[in-house]
Image 1 (spheres, rainbow, N blue to C red):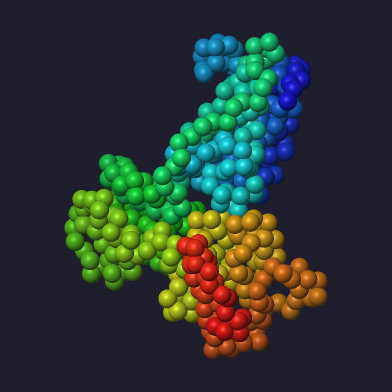
Image 2 (tube, rainbow, N blue to C red; image 1 turned 180 degrees about the horizontal axis):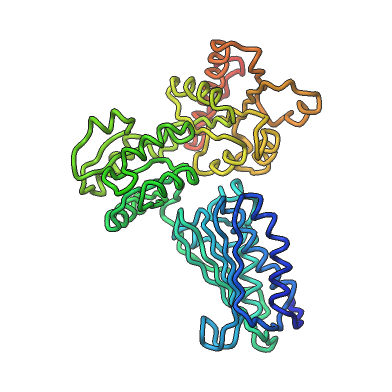
Length: 454
């Protein structure tokens, strides 16, 4: 891969990229802040590759951030002022998006590897974007760094020499970074809400050692915001906090139909079990909390236990969503509720549903687009999908779903008992498939039952 050097104005380049990125930021109600520390002057580099670097980082920030700030700062730095020995241009992109765990950062710049496979689902593919960004940066003699905290956002810094020298830079493709193989694949998310910084750090360390991704919040308002953003698998919630205390946070979580099923484990120096249970807490731990207590209580409620089969209900109508979720929970299955296709895609990788019940007409991403994305990914394409819709489908609509979904149920054609029976059959069928797959993974060969046997 060659470099084509030309001299251009840094500010002109930035303005061109911003004009392209602004609609992406607006699409998710993000506020894009631009800080140009003038004079920026000229840079002699590969214009196309520099533009691609800046576009990749800003587009990633726009994808992973919603209703928050994205900040771009550009400045000219003297030799040895920053990471570079020579005079350079520094592009710093900071967002308030989902952030990354240390384990996720290790794999960040690997080609075709993302934060985890679920980032494709959530915000569109970036499998090559950051790998190419790093490659282009190093080809021009520059450096890239990243700082990130899971649940809080990320900061990428790119340093490019103002005069790229073809005789000094290595034109070969950089070697792939070698990383230690992770001993634990992290999928389940635990959110810690506690105003005490020492307790937050201690619980975060305990949970990380147990193999969980951990997000932390220092107050109730931030905790609720993170719960809505991350949809964690469990929440550890301190009772005594200034401002919005744990009881108010718990009440807010339980009133939100999309968050009400998340197990909430209260923590406090005082034992207040009865009040906790009365308000809907899942369990209660008296501080100080030990690592073995955390492991035991999370195992007790099957947090991160993939053997506890889960049904994903994708439905924008709250009443319908709650009705279907109640039916499924009565059958002993776990439920993850998503209000549209986009949210469902965001959580496919970490939730690993055995069955998806899907509405078709939804805001942001409808059922048709969701199914198309689902079938594009080899890891997801075998998840059975059952459509529950009140829409009369045209021939063209049915053709779009053909081969993608197991069954289409017209909501108005069934009463509650009929719907219950149909869902029970689909759940039973999914359970049979799940069991058969597990046995096959263990080396057993199990003949499939006839399709009419449930």
